[in-house]
Image 1 (cartoon, rainbow, N blue to C red):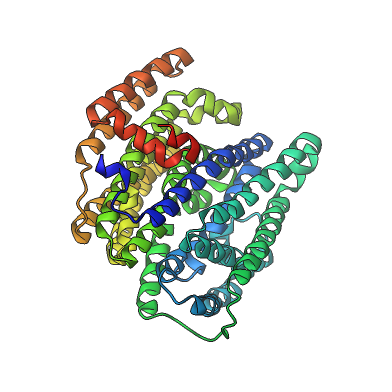
Image 2 (cartoon, rainbow, N blue to C red):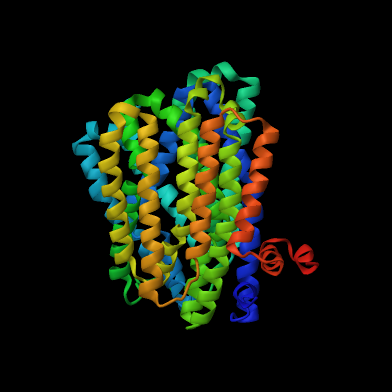
Length: 499
């Protein structure tokens, strides 16, 4: 099938794109379980420990989406096609601008330090919270290094740097859990922050050296910004900030309305639901830089083909993983410990909405690659409005279940908006309605079945999953040829060549 062979893309570029897809997928597959194992370990230490871990995650999101002016999209958008002699000047200039835009945030933190508890909770002192704001450029520089590597299609190096943090964190926490658990139980409030900052600093230093070695062109570093920088950066900053508040406002509200212990329970359950996001990210992390490289050479047929391959892949994978988690919710919640048993329905709600929404989320990637972020802003505003309307109605009566419904429903509405609008305004023809509707029906059937018959025996869950997947594959029109082609893109080259 033409739609899955990427034959419209130049062989050299196609090879780098497919290589990036493979490296991203397999490194994620190897290391992602360690990230969830970390959450499980900390959840077993106690809700306070996993709640603090959630604060670390929240801190990285604030640094990335609010403090990081413009975000990764700026680097990935402008580096392809830029004169190599100007790339380092651009990166240095851009990082300087980011540090300058951080100053008003730091000033606000110094003037109103008591307000920082909305982000960091009430367990850490205002002085510590101000120090964390000052240290946010470490994570921002780490993100810039990764974005540079992705923009130059060096996906392997970018993924390896990211996975060092995941693997290192797990090894440290697992060792403490096994051999010094009382110390971990007493010291998690500062230990988790120290581990995160040390590992991120070390990886940032490694990545920065890698970037500097690749730019030894002899050109003098000077202030340089490409044409269109300010318009694109300001727009993407609006998108990033709105995306944070629209997508992770549930963390802030649960933290401030429920306290750290309730927040810890929510983080533990969300981390299991985030399996879907991790898998989706591993499948399409190379999509945005690949699209920007194709657009730079005006290969719009290749854009349509690559996007269609990713969309069809996500529909199939999300159906499989979403229904597997929903039907196996009992054993998965059991990993966290008995105190989380009552949250099975919360996990089902989060996973069902995530599985339905994430396949459509790449509509935002399509809009970003064509520099049409104003539509993403509209989608984020829509998500924020839906979430706030639902949260304040549902939280008083349903608490975490209400937060899950509000977060999931608002994400689904926003992602569908991005996909539909993305096809309309970019002119890229996509065929997805039938497959997407069948995905929604499959997820709905599994969710209702699981909620009604909880707890499910493993054999019953497996049989139900097989029936649902067989129905989806047949109804959505996946042929043997298409499935082989999808596998070819992600399997290691030697195995893929045998298909």
